[in-house]
Length: 93
Image 1 (cartoon, rainbow, N blue to C red):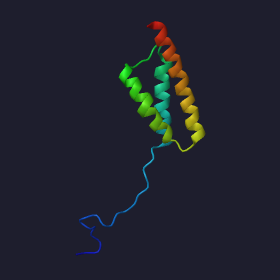
Image 2 (image 1 turned 30 degrees about the vertical axis):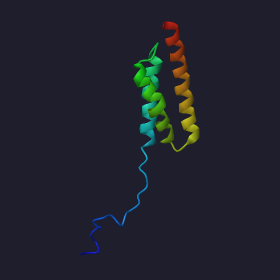
Image 3 (image 1 turned 135 degrees about the vertical axis):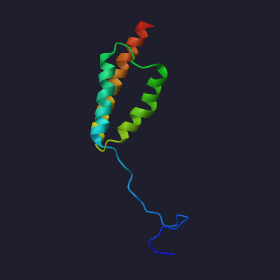
Image 4 (image 1 turned 90 degrees about the vertical axis):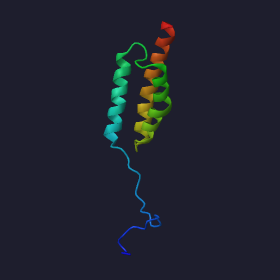
């Protein structure tokens, strides 16, 4: 057996750094979400999507930014718009 060939059972594992997304891609996602939210008088998505975005997508995106101050700023903007939409949704109910 050649020494250059990887072991069939994976005993020699290469450790690679986790792949981080391009920070601009993350920013663009937040810009898109905020644009949709700011253009809407009530939530632009159904309840299930809002829950998924708020509980899964946005928290995950915050962790993808290396600068925690920037992440906190995006979070504050998202929460401010979410609060506005929540108030509008209650009024319209």
